[in-house]
Amino acid sequence: MTTNELLPLAGLRVLVTRAAERADGLADRLRALGAEPVIRPTIAHAPPDDLAAFATALGRLEAGVYEWLLLTSVTAVEAVAEGLKGRAPHLGGRVSLKIGAVGPATAAACRELLGVEPAGMPERFIGEELVTALGDPVGRRVLLPNADLARPTLEERLREVGALVDRVVAYKTVPAPGGAELASLLADGGLDAILFTSGSTARYFTLQVGEAGVAAARRLIIACIGPATADVCRELGLAPTLVATTYTETGLVEALVAHVARR
Image (cartoon, rainbow, N blue to C red):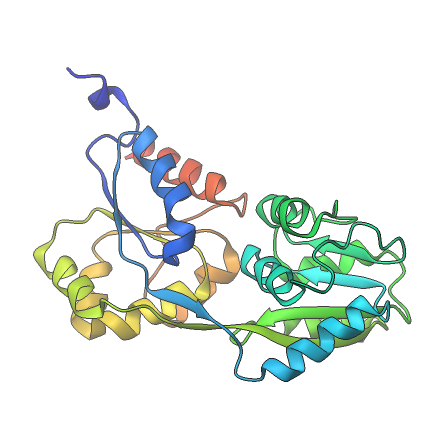
């Protein structure tokens, strides 16, 4: 028996659907556990259609209008950092501004790209849970830069508790190329599991592969990074095999390992 055969995911071919610039870390985790990651992104990211609205919001951020900047993804952090280039590349000196990060990866991106230690991070790494980061939210001015496809739940909850929210589209989620190749891969039956890291990865997956691809996917392990992603999968007719209890890449891989061990 080889060393690789002793690893918990030995021989498992796992489809990684997240955006290309986010796939490498997840693929490395899978390889370290003996799996063979198959990277076929279903989504990509692009600048917002309304660049002026985003630029205006960042100008207000730079001017000190907002008390809180809430960031629900690494991509949102990158969009803010890119938008501030040549203006205020780091926000660390702004004493009055606090940042809320949805989870540890987003918090790390805040430190690296914005020069800020987040002031708040929810216990559960879900966007709507960021409401808890504000403490007393009444009257707080909040900037919420989102993807165009982001659910409105966080904005709605902030308004319900009295925060003054400006939500602006910071980036678009668009389909990645290669749908025909992905459909062929499913038809060939060479996959064992699919990892979905967001509702968007699942939605564009189904659009790319069509009904036959979705039917083939139902025979595989369908692993979701958290309950929001799992809900989208159910809507699309892809019943999750497992849902991570820690809503991070690490938590997703650990849940897959635990599932395989139980089989």
